[in-house]
Length: 523
Image 1 (cartoon, helix red, strand yellow):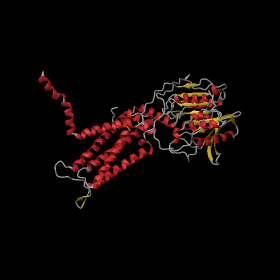
Image 2 (cartoon, rainbow, N blue to C red):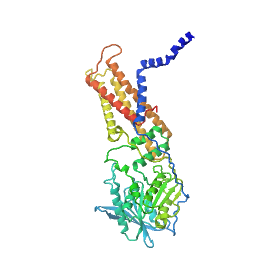
Image 3 (cartoon, one colour):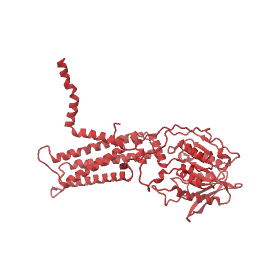
Image 4 (cartoon, one colour):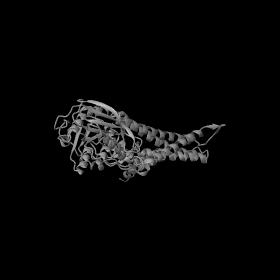
């Protein structure tokens, strides 16, 4: 018994001794593995979490038929010839802008009127040609004003200020002959749905508001929702989904992107006129269930129950199927406007295809200070700049002048150079992958090989970059203390500074890369 116990004792300690022996013989491998794990844990810990909740509320259309119930027959699309002309509108500040006025020819009595409000992708009086022609051919006078963009940029948009121009356009339309002032309103698309409620809340002349593909939520929340929907549709890795708040939660200060937190509900709660909301069920960018629910609650605050909602099967953000405008959507819009005030509360209130929204849009947490706004940009730029400086200097150090090296790195220059280049390559591959996935997402295309294989490639190169960086201090140690006993090859002060600066830059870039989830995390 004693001999058996003593014989087993070496086996009990064999594994720890094996690990220690491996670590002693292969210190670079152990440091590399530990570094990868640390970077993975850092990426998991440092950023804001992302856990969208399932959408539990439902909107069930009362019927698949989207037709608007009217008291009397209303004109069909194409019933009237449309007279089109470009007119000039004088705004309150004295500026004149062009606008396209379309008038149905031969309408008996006064005709309803509609001002089109631009979304993000349009700004010209030449836009909305298909929509305006269709609605006007059914007896509605339409006006498409130019959108001033001199104070409208990617980083700055003032919706209350923009709304003044559309309010002036409505005033101009009301002054034109043949317009029924009791049926004059707004047709707003996408981002324009943040502007139309402002006009409607402060101008009693607005008789109705049609909201097409309305985000309803602040753009930051809607943008995060859209990104999540697109990426889930692609089958993107979980790490990519987790990066959504890290990107969209960015804060660049009060003067930049302030508009993405604009909450239109403040104005919708003051709207007392009938509201029509149209969505396509193929539009993954909009909260097609959550949006109407919020709008209904907002309108009820103002004592307004006149909300009509329509969903169109497979239609996209522009109410198109295969890039063809859904005529039924235009017919329904014209019928609803022509039938007012009866159609304001006509049944069914909700009709069309069944909308689908799997997850709720909600608050997007802000990243920590070191990963938000210009701080994150500067960290990346400084890291890249210093790494490139190191590449240039170590390359120069490999050159000779009159048979003498310009800089002596004693063998560690190559390690520094390759480490910097590999880290930069890891960033290039990750950014390229992100752009490719974004293009796939917004085009509703599928490419599993690119989505899954591209992410695996980015991870492999990222892990390889860690290995190359880990080699740097070991190579420099050998440069100082050669294993062949040839003496102390101390680097010059300048060469040593280049090595230190390069190594710091590489570590900065690795931690910045890890923040975006490139490295595997244990939890």
